Length: 183
View 1: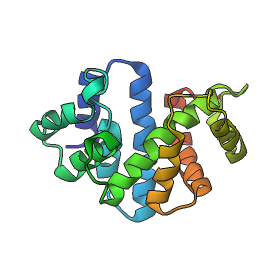
View 2: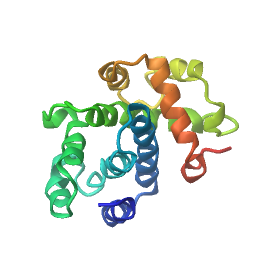
View 3: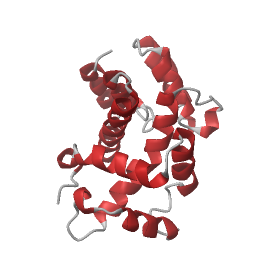
């Protein structure tokens, strides 16, 4: 499966603009980590694009609901396992770098979007780690985002949280226009 096919599959099952943008943000972050680790950017990007493709239709059984569809469409097992592992509820272990990276970037991308949207300039390029840390302490801000998962994700990647935030933020800056976060 190539990126165009993955994007078509995502759009077939996802209509909400916010979920499509989230997929693009996660794709960008996954590609950045693939580069960092010397892995296949296309494969990791596809993983990021498809990780929530089934969420809109089956939110209570995500990501398990979509696995058979991904298998039928020819999505390779390493991608499917990483997608299953990005939810603690599945019990699928995150035993590859791709799986750990997907888990690590998923919540953080959403949180960075939220932090950016409350800035006067609405520009991801001006977001600082200090702002991210401050907003993390406010449990009412982006309350649906699991702060513990964000921190656990960085720990599973064995990198400092600050480095993780910057890696993901810079990756998302590359697609900021598509995300509506370029000011």
